Image (cartoon, rainbow over all chains, first blue to last red; front, side):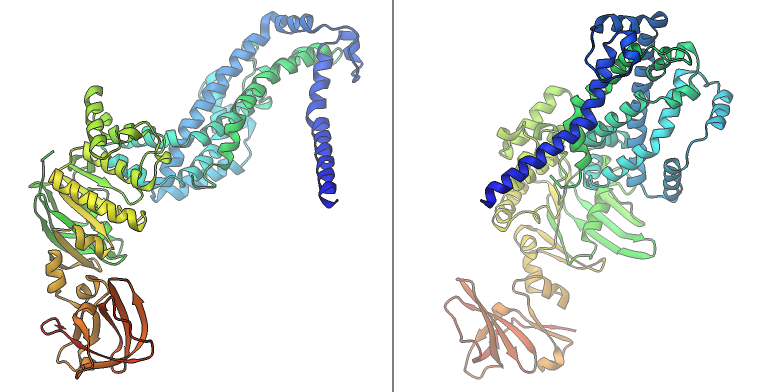
Length: 279
Length: 328
């Protein structure tokens, strides 16, 4: 009797959890999708209704063609910024984390303090723009990459440093005895072992950078520098908004991070728990 | 693989800040010798090995390998290979790549690396495991991979840092024999660090007993067993440990008096000492008897396997002639 009741309780709580998850995660997505396929007039009502007329393809073509294929340029820019920034974050984060963890010196405390400051102190926009202008990096893609690296580096250094402390020092020493130069120890032994963290970092940071709205808005003005999140402005204005195209744009912008997440889902979980239990 | 070299240490000192870990160690290891550093934890034996390997820098002194001063040389330039206590296999590489790692760093041709790796794997019975990752190997197999990684580099000197301490007792006994075989086969100089006096006694040509960063005694296993220079060495070599008492209590005119458990015999005919049997360990071939001797304290006696004195009984013992040690 009690066994049966437990099973029933279990099923009911499971159903409840599913229902909550559906409301929180699926419904907004469904709303975006339904609005994205509606006509302009119908979408303007902003109702959660089944579309009377399906305009999926028409809306998609309209969004892509808007302002001389601006979305495609935005995809290109965002991809370059994301790939560049994430690659630098992985390399520099792992290198700094490695040196901080493995080579104790008087400077370590200072470097560590700088890393923590990078994590705690909020960035100031206007002075950053002055600096960028002084370096002739304002309104450039590589300037934007450096900004994203600067914002993300503290976090990745901390993440890598923590993980490197779980890699036995014997491995470094074995490699040194095998004749490895310091950079070979890092690239041939340590970096491959950091894969779980690297995957986590790549996913988390690439989604954050790809979806970043405010930083490109401040630091990367200009028609040619548009990033995907900024293309959302194409369909919103004070007097007229095209909600069907806006939501189609949202849908298109959401797809790449979604794919990354679906593809790397298992590795992310592995990376989050990596080092917790010795394998 | 017959390249073999002497290792000479001259006045080696090593300090970490104000702490002196190695104090003026001078030692000469002959080509082809199997030399074991033995001592309690913290005696500096691992540090000394790391100084020879070049993983640590000496504070002062000279290290020569094969007649060449390598005191300031990089580890890879010293012609040494090292087997770590943790094996230190690269987890992301297969057994084949683990063994060939040093060769590929040295940019040897692929065919040559393959041949060398396979020869080493063959010698260590690892051929069937070449494409596995270290995590799919047992402890003994990992150990052999670590040794294989050392062999392919064709070093002048092998360094072993407590390589058997992570294995279970049966496997350890087997690996002891395999290592001794390997030493005979390669004829290379080997330096082996352990805290286990059984490993030292069974494998070494030369044992170096270290105590507090100093060399206490150097000699062949039987020299150390038969003629220890200090109570420390006497207590460290041999199992069960030698019984050590202050000379005064033992009625001897010396600082410390020692007698090994195997050199005591049970007797009721005018025994030198009489004690109460506190505990008996029957090992089969031997029986180890723990006596409480009033004037001395605990005395351990190793007797024949058939001996089984009742606990609580009084038992007389006498030392064998010529087997007693008297230290200043």
